[in-house]
Length: 364
Image 1: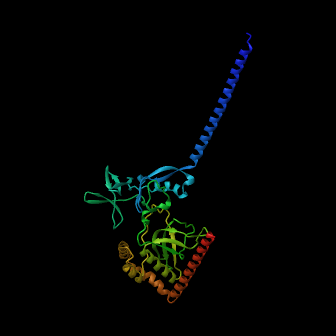
Image 2: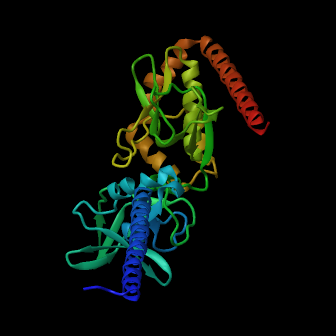
Image 3: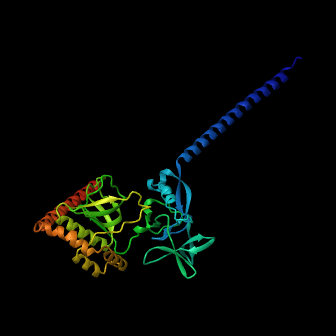
């Protein structure tokens, strides 16, 4: 059927409008699709850049035992998380505090004071620590029931607020809680393991030419100073109590006096699971007298040492092995001591100079 010009014009306008609408819709759909792709890509990138890290669910004070109920996992941009925070997930899971039966230990507030609790036999008990022995126990009626833990508790090194991101620098194993008589000591005369790194736990031992081998101090976390970003080859830092400092000093002097002896370091293979070894090195009489009268030494340490010497018969050990080894050196013992002390002093001065030179280089 024939159409007039007006009809053809209206039809063409309609078709043109439909085509234009289709084009616009196509552009809108393409833009929306691109936005969806970009959003999905961004979400994937954010997901890849996110890690689950532990943060505190409550305020924590310095020295407080950390239990898993005080922590929560929170997604955090990994670019904003210290490298030592991501490893904490494994650390905390491995050292989640339980007793040997698998009962979890948790924290409850009592008059604004955090206290450890444990649920055993469908009952809740407050977990207490015996000051004399540092063993944990619960009260059952009038009796103490001692609780053996499955691992060394983790404690806070400093005060921390809720939502603080947990890193290894903020935690310490409870057998490394800093007491008032602890000092940072530097030693450069110890024979170190080839693979020793900062954070390892060690015993310091002394070996005599006769084959006698004694533990001087046990389970100490080691720090290795760096010069120009490189670990020192012969110097370590140890946090020691006053009595441990005296033990070290006595052992070093006698290692210098006895030719063929050595004072060396051994590493713990699983520090979190292994208990500290009991020191076995018997002090000489002058150092033992000083230790007994030193007011800087905690009373508990004095009692522990007195008990150790009564059990190990330190006088007999010294007379039979250490004193006899020193006496066999004769006048050479003093000469050995002077030469070794001079060498240690020179090494300390040189290391100090290198350290200060490295700092000066950084400042410049």
